[in-house]
Image (tube, rainbow over all chains, first blue to last red; front, top):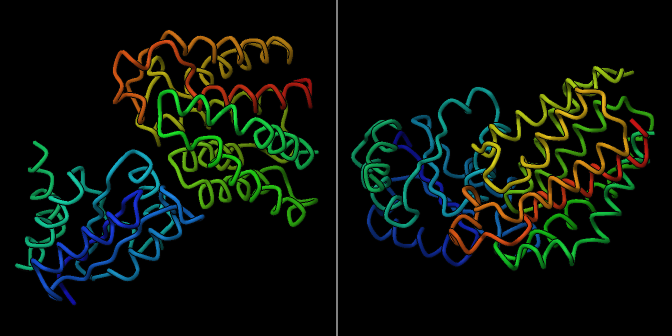
Length: 128
Length: 194
């Protein structure tokens, strides 16, 4: 698929899954979508390995936009991007946007065929 | 030797996990001790596989365990510290090599956390320790400086991390990351008498 992929990263597995449900309701299957929530032990937190796996599931040649909730989700997502293969790294971006609203609007933008930069900008305009 | 020091660091953090969690319950999400304990247990499990490897490789592997297993922001922060230290440290480091590598690792943590000194974070311990290390301070002096610097976060207002949501209410509590940093530095000072 050539539309930009969306990855949702939350400390809470339920929030990650719920936000993904809201994205699906809006864009159906037109956008690659994956989520990662919870730490290695299944509690609240985030896991670099799970985020990397989510990036792979949502992979698109057009790139992947990651939406995060709080601090650790952001730093673990940035870490995950750095650990991805070099040929993919440059096409993955962490958006500075609210998680739920950002994911829905980013996916909507992506479903129209927008570039990764446009998807990111649209999501980040929410926070401005 | 480096494996023995890392083992002592890990055991100390595991032993102090409850106290670290208590600090984090006061001004954060209360998971710091548990997260660090999980990371350090993973490090302990990995150490036997690293026996005899150069210090740089050991530190990089330890950092990767912390990144993958901690589960909170501390994972990338402490993991980045260890990995950068491992990247910069030569096989048989001099005191000057150690000071330079430590400074590079602190800079990497600051970049990862998008943070600076005075924001009530682990950096408020790491920066003064880096300065003391460069200035040629003795191991006991560096240890004392690390603990004093962690105490110094008590009157600070948090600007970064979950504690920053509390604003002025973060004042009066020690930063948990500063405390765990001081604990680790104290163990290393005791072990190798820099």
